[in-house]
Image (cartoon, rainbow over all chains, first blue to last red; front, top):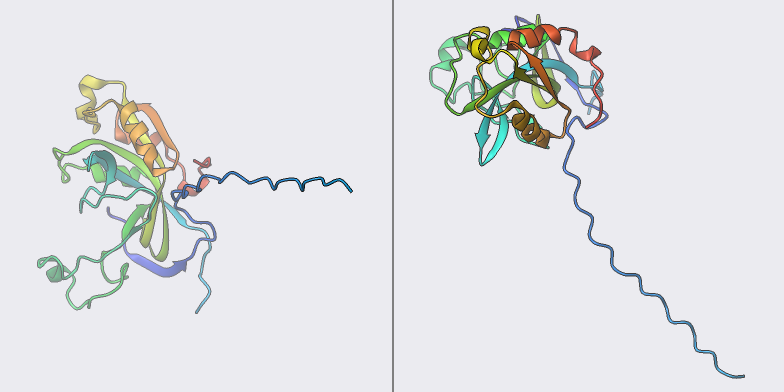
Length: 43
Length: 193
């Protein structure tokens, strides 16, 4: 591609990533264990 | 540590070939046949010294990180789609593995060498891809748009692997497509993928 002669050089550090990266798969949620209700003991 | 000059990527125009790589359709640079990875930036490398003939053209330039103002290295983007479409000239003959040619915008960042009609950068990723769908099939080869060997719809769908907007554009030639897209790349409204 013919784009002509260089004019100036600079650095570009995008704040937002220009690459739509692969989102890592979240691990399947483990079932939450419901704590057993405390046994009711007659007073 | 120093502050960058800019915090948004430069947006330029490019022409890509579309070719099959490892069972998938990928964007490929027309000259050096570099395959553009999906979901990962392309990082420039300077081939000076890697190809024996090149040092004759740019003598006196030592090995350097690309892009170097005194070299021709870096990932290219042009200011207008028409300039990118000029890359279609007969100099770059159709290769057997090329199924289509597409135009698009590219984000350029890292070290950027601004030139008279475009940029050369150390890092790049496609920003938007325009896939021409020819409507004048019989004459398309005369107009710079060879008939794709796969349906344009299929090619467009495959290129969504890049995670950027892919647009199917009915047109008679790549140059006609370039005219249709002829506005500064930075003015284009790009919807998130």
